Structure formats: C-alpha cells, structure tokens
Image (cartoon, rainbow, N blue to C red; front, side):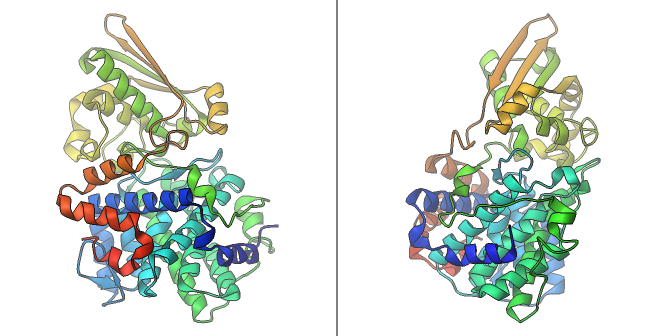
Length: 450
C-alpha cells in the first residue's frame, strides 16, 4: 500500500554514497539542462508576468530570482525559477505508458529550498534524485491523465518530497507536507485540452510553489492529511485509483528520463527528428508538398494530433508547440525546430500555415504497442505534387533513454540556449561547476545563473 509514510521513509533513506556514478551523472545533466533552458526563457513574456507577480507580492528573501539581483522567499523563487525551466517546453520527460510528466519541473523548487538552507551540492543531488524517483513511480503506476487530471498533480507530490528532504523535515513533518500538497493542489487536465493558452507552460511552476509552501507549513508544525492516499475520499479513491509504488533508494528512475533534442512537445520528438532528416536528405521543396502523413501512437494522436482539440488553428506559441501539424510543417520548411519556430511572425507566415493543413495524423495500434514497450515510434510519408513519395520510420530520437544524450550533447544544447546571454567563459564556468557539484554549495551555483 502506498502511503505518506512510505514516501517519507524512502526520502529519508536516500544517501548520496548509495547513488551510482551513472545516477549522479544523469542528475547533473538534468540540472545543467534545466539551467540552460531557464536562461533561454528569461526574456519570455509569460515568465516576465510571473516575475512581476512574485516581486509585487514579496519583499527581499533568501533566494535569488534567476537572471536578476532580486530575491524572494523559497516559495516565490520556486514559482518564478520553475516557470523559467518549464515555459519553453524544452524540459525533460519521463515516458510511461499512461503519463508523460516532466521531472525537471522539480529542480528549481528544490534548488530554492536548498539555497535557503545553505546546503551543499551533495544535498541537492540527493533531493533531486528523490523527486525524480517519486515522479517516475507515480507516472508509471498511477497515471491520472485519462481520469481528467493534469500531470502536475504528480509534480506537487514529488516536489514536496524532494523539497521536504532538502529542508531537513523529520518523518512526521514530511508526511504532513506530502499530505497538504497532495490534498490541496490537484490540477485539471483542461490545461492541455481544447484551445491551449500560456498557463500550459506555467502550471508546473504553480505546483512547485505549492509544494515548497506545503513543506514550509509542515516545518512550522502544520498538520496535514497523512492518510492522503488511502483515506476516505483520498487520492486513490478520487484521483488515481488503486496503485503501488516501488521506490528505489538508488534513484535509478532518472535513467528512464529523456532529454529533448527539439523545442517541441515530448511526443513530437521522433516525428520532428524524422521530418528534419527526410527533408534534408531528399532536399524537399515545401512548396511542392501535397500531403504529410504521420502514423503515431495513441498518446501523440490524442494530445498533439487533434484528439483533445483542434490542432490546425495555430496562432500562439502555446498552441504551436502542442500541434503536430504545425511542428511537422515548420520542421520540414526550416529543417530544424528551435525557439525561432515560435516567434509570432513565424507562426503566422503563409508558408507554414498553408503546409500544416496538409498534415494528417493517424494512430497506429502497432506503434502504440511499441510506445508501451518503451519506444517512441513515428512513421512519416511525404507526397509531392508530381506523385513522388518519401518515407521514413523512427523508433526513437537522440535524447530518448535508448539513445541518451552524452555530456557533449547536453553541453551543446546548453550553449545553444545561453549563447545570447553568456559568453564562452561563463558557459564553461557553469558547466564545470555542475560537473563537480559535490565540491560546491548550492549558493555558488545560483550565483552564476545570471
């Protein structure tokens, strides 16, 4: 039976010395990846709106708002800094058959908590490992998407467990924090259905904020529903259904996490990589394309293919990065998929608006079975106006757990995301600090996120 006691006992049992070199390395990659994405989002309008809200409501605090000299409480910093790591939709993902959350949504809130407590890099690695393990186990064993709940319903729990460990809560306080977070902050799936808006990229920041707030409340003695999961009208009865988790103190769920290669929704990664490769190899002229047909798995067809709302009417970034028709059209034309694809003027251009309407998305049960076995398949056919057809099949993409990104890959992505703000010396300094995180305090790391 999964209980708050089980989650608390797990968190308190995790020890850096028991984490393998591979797990430590992967957690560090996730930290570096998240910082790079955050830097790339510092000029975005929605993140600026979050920052304005945090600074209006809070005075000076113990935690920096990344990219500025302003400070806030751990709660305010969790909200703003998580909005940075999440908004661009370039974060990592955990691939489970019925749920695809983003474990990196936990990182900024845990960093804020660790900064507030003057913790070491070792403490940070332990706490992030805890959050990844909890998030992965909930996604795998307790999917909530088909029951109408958003995946950040998992995040508020995993972030509370990770932040609670970082803050040094004892067993009972941690149980209370988990109970408060998991009872009070369940999010509806409507965030990602129908006409998508900018809250889609900020919802996890709200979850991180609520998680840290729950932890601070519990640390000051607030009791919560410690029977969160099994209690009458509790999480299992209302939110998830029955489930059990198998939490590993070695925190190896991080090894099952993918890193995005393209600025695109998780389920689009293989399809985008395939269309980029096909367009480049065949030198396809987009003006001659009559039809683009994608066979994909059920989750992709549902979420970004049109099953949860029209994906052909695309006018904003929030709609574009959750529209397979838009992403495939833009990737074929540009032969890449970067932040530039979501510039408002680029979204409105006639070439992509015309081409996206030639895209057909169809679920293939065979591909759904492959996805449930751990792959991310995509089968693409492009037909030209003279009847010429091009075909490509992908089982996964660079960054999928079967093709994990190397340090060189992650560093290249970091360089791409930060080049407009950091010079080479600053980039190298951040990279080396994250690689040697055990030898630094969290405050040292935060001081470099300008």
